[in-house]
Image 1 (tube, rainbow, N blue to C red):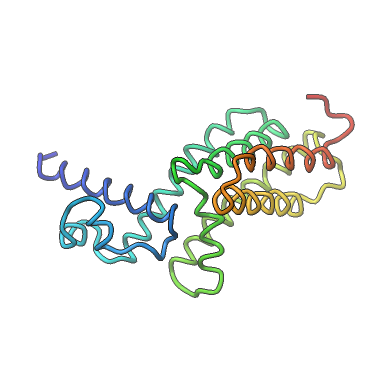
Image 2: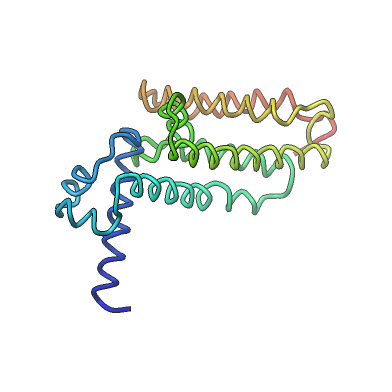
Length: 205
């Protein structure tokens, strides 16, 4: 790899990282090549030459967010035993990531769903695909917990995942909009109460 190519790749990474921070804090539609260039202290043409269009930058941001989400939430949760321990880990790691106001990570899956709920665009399709894939992974984990006898036999996996997702919407609202310092504790307590209604009486942690 030549020094010029390496510098170009490092600059691309810096552009995507900066754009991701901006999108997490202000929304995907807040992004512009000019604002990203200004934040990095480089020319707008310098940003354009590395990422192309604004749409390409937004796509790169979603790809990078998805990669980081898998790395921070999904992959470590897979180290837990199948069933309820793994489901609890998925939710706990997701809560920790989404409630981290200081690092502006937020949850683009949740926030983006509101930003693009009435918008028909390729970006919406990408976000919808990523979100459905994540929810499908959670449904699989719930099904594994059912098979292991950790949850009541009458548990509806889709309903449980919907209720968990609803808790995450509440977390985003209180942690990021209301800036409630106890939002993290409240959503964890809410999840514990929720999962207790689904947990099998035969399951002992």
